[in-house]
Image (cartoon, rainbow, N blue to C red; front, side, top):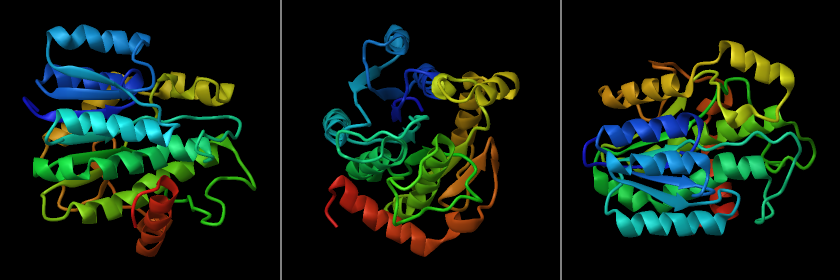
Length: 273
């Protein structure tokens, strides 16, 4: 990664912070998109500037305008992006809507990353052999309701999060097609259960379980970097569970669903069709 540009969302805590820190130490030029550049995690990253180049870019994934502004900053500073890690995510116990009128979990976990990836598409193409990593979860048994993507009829934080992760997997298929001919790879990465602040505010049972059996953010980041350091998988997109490629099942393999979601997402975020 020496001299290469890496862009990470949610890089001030958990896996994102561990990954950003490791990449800086490997010599990458790292741009971390974060909601608050004054947070404790942001201060930890700022302290790494003595080791390498790191930029903190303010970006609220709950506001599409903020995503657009952050993408412009990255594009203005870097002619190529070699690694994009769509890492940030939320678990919200109660349904909430963003300033854009979209269901917040779906927007933060998926739609804003969909928009960011598309806005940086030319920078990824310029890198020749870029990697895009979508942070996901097991989705074999999950289905999207295209008539209720915003979860207005029913909502639970577990199902909302699972659907947003399925959307990331489906979108990876079409993004890979957009990047064909550039030697780019789109990877979906499930790190397993990880002890991080992501689960704060969820059920006590779930939080306790993760605290007992979950990996540390550093372990999850090390697995991701091992994948990235290895030779590219033969297929793009590829789904990794920890460090092993495994096949997908169910709606995650549905090409028509991937196309339908891509078209709907394009309209929802205001990209040209």
